[in-house]
Image (cartoon, rainbow, N blue to C red; front, top):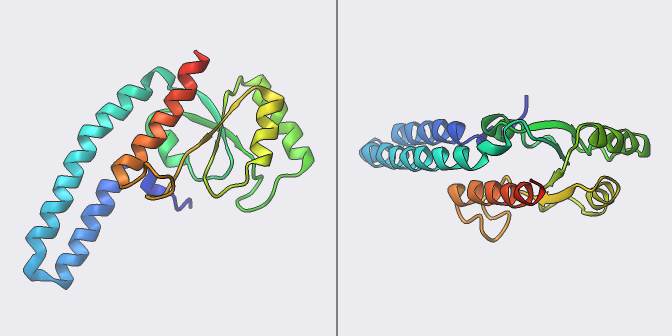
Length: 171
């Protein structure tokens, strides 16, 4: 399976609840505190999730290409469609043949965004963007992955805002 499940905010709520329950078993005297904090987090996610979904709603079904297979949970939650990846397999650099096929497919499916993460090299995405007219967008899957991602919610805010910034320019 794909380990990037926390990029769906609904899954983040489940994770927070599981963490709170685990800590409550270890520190039963603080169980209420752990559960309360998980509930507060879930409430914050619920509020922001409605905002994120509304913000990305105009682009439901938009086709994108991702560098790595990090984004299936995020894109499914927000209605984006990853048509392919720069890496033919996770961690395997693309071949010239794969990139040529990808460029053709991006043209056929009118893909305007290539998603990369801060730790990925930039040369290949820029080359593909130059050949297709797509924009390279840097999203992060980690708190602290970019300066604005100070916590989980600001991380998702960053990702949504980066996507909307580029998508808005294209429409």
